[in-house]
Length: 357
Image 1 (cartoon, helix red, strand yellow):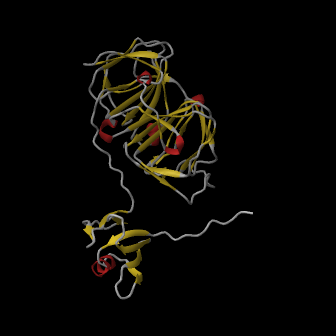
Image 2 (cartoon, rainbow, N blue to C red):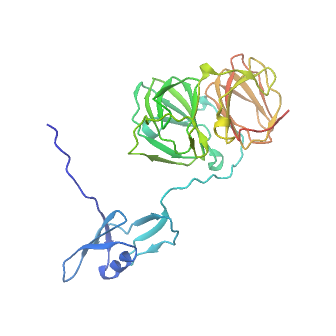
């Protein structure tokens, strides 16, 4: 027999020096008085409002805290007579895209950057430590053991987000995109702004590359929606973007911008209306020319093989599978000493940019 959990009502306690001074302040903010005692010298008052129950108590040990009132009206912060601060903030956190602070960067797997435990117990390795001033985050994520992932239905307030499966497989489900499916090594999806989704199950030794723009963005839990949803609407737009699921097994390899190289276009440029482009390129053992690009953010991750990155004003760097690099606009660079099996994931913002050799 299961015993029901006890029911509680939550309240927070805040200190007061004098209820006679504090109560008019809170009532002016839309709180109401529910209880007060003792009658001859009130020391405790219970007030409520805006979904919050507060116990104002004379002599409480807590330091004055901060109440945040969320809504559409922007106002200067106020301070109660007893020192409690009241801030007014937007109900919905807005996404701000910082200006890109361009920099050349390489991140090698052998550098032994720390893996940290992040959301849903997954291990994260930062591929762009300075995040170009907050413009982008690139994470190498892994799950070591096969099994269910302790995830919830959630969404991100984000401008662009890519999930690229580097190794293993993971089962996912997305709002209005049909039943759950398996993302295998070489496959990728974009998660358009605010599309509800959930990570369900992973193989052992799963590795994915996750790109988020901007670097700091809000993840919100949706406690009401159940996935999969009953409708399959692949044409639905979320924040001006459509869901894209690219499968390596169905991809077409075509000549790339470097002679002798081939690439597969993931379709993400079209799905994001040019916000970002994602390609996977193979060298076939052919070196690339010295070239410059003019896109704002140019991130690459070595999926297989080896190459030497020769960049203007920088020492050559030998890169292999698991390594990443960022090339700022206008910097001349060359992919040299490429192995026959070299394969590079390239993420560019924006999708359309010029390369000059």
